[in-house]
Length: 127
Image (tube, rainbow, N blue to C red; front, side):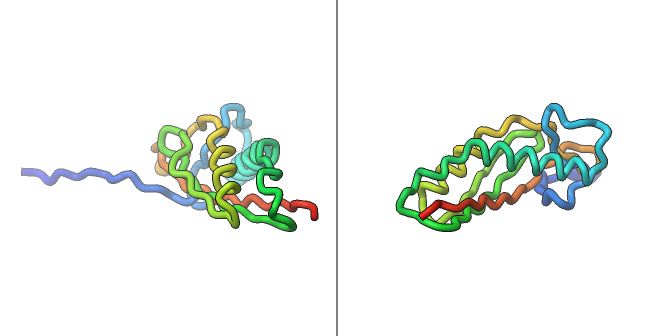
């Protein structure tokens, strides 16, 4: 009898993946590094446009929210985790990340693969 070999799904870091996830309209002529940069810039623009910094008026000065999420092998955002100095900021970060579209999934060895993406959200609340 032969051995049954199953492959468990793995999650790879964004910077080490062979081919990063892509937005629907990512230019095909970009290099892998340019695709990573393009992806990160687009994520940042969406977050900057939609993140409501006024939800915690009692917080002042520079604030940082650390967000980690997975883009799964189907290109969907999953397992969002946010850490912030206030629970309202964590909920807002999760809300904004849920606004991201479905992506063309990342690939490793030419197969769709889940990746983990870390995003710092930094902003200043005027005093």
